[in-house]
Image (tube, helix red, strand yellow):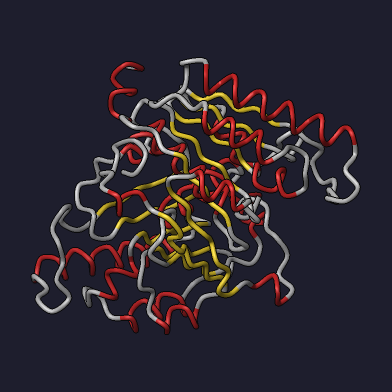
Amino acid sequence: MAEGASKQLGRGLVQVFTGDGKGKTSAALGVVLRALGHGLRVYLVFFMKGDYPYGEGKILSQLPNIEVASFGERGSFTDPNNVKPEERKQAKQALAAARQAMLSGKYELVVLDEVNVAVFCRLVSVDEVIRLIEDKPPDVELILTGRNADSKLVKAADLVTEMVKIKHPYNEGVAARRGIDY
Amino acid sequence: MAEGASKQLGRGLVQVFTGDGKGKTSAALGVVLRALGHGLRVYLVFFMKGDYPYGEGKILSQLPNIEVASFGERGSFTDPNNVKPEERKQAKQALAAARQAMLSGKYELVVLDEVNVAVFCRLVSVDEVIRLIEDKPPDVELILTGRNADSKLVKAADLVTEMVKIKHPYNEGVAARRGIDY
């Protein structure tokens, strides 16, 4: 199945989902679901989320052909001007894990969730992520998510979508809801 | 589990994913995955897609607590100025199915995929969709996807996100890829 799946994918692209609107991680998860449905193999790494207790983590672990890894300290606010060594270490581990998965030949889709934010917060350098993109095997698809995507990443990507917030109830005092928003 | 799940959701909102960029249906699918992971019950209806053979349909059918329905003639291009009676009939059935699911008490999340396009193509009237929104039980979340969301729907929704195409390789001759794009 893996060989067939790889043939199905053909040329793998680099996709970026960015912007301040909803749906960046959700869109990546939707592509993951679609890819799994076609028998593609998926590696999904979460940056800056720590021990991932979210709803999608539970359900993804029930599906075949996917490996999920999570790094970072959940709930800790990262100040770009005052990065803790542990935050930087976790992000570097996440990037190394993504690189290893991308080069392993085991996956047709590798998702780096919130890597754009990790770059913005200087946990990893943009040039390290650019090198990842440059080293991408042709038959692997990469998806990078997170707001504030660096202009170098936008330039290096094949497909960039900005999620724009047109209207958001959290501005009107509605709190994030478990099961829908996280 | 259903009762607890319903309590988790609390106030259900009306979300719209629109715009010409990628990720509208994918984002809805990502929210579906998250909701299922938390034990919420999901009804997902596809407008204008016919017998749904896509990757996500296969994998979704393996998950618990979700019902998927699909209406419309797949691959048929709908001309807003020359709608076929069968296209209108299918879209009306899709909307009726969504309404029934929304009012049944069986689901905490109801997704109407591509309903915005069905309105744009005048397969269903915007006022029918507005009535659906007005009749929404408080503990049900509605997600409407598709480009060209009617301004009345944007006004009626709680949360609206526009997917904006910043860069797209299909403009450069790359065809849609099975397993990733559909």
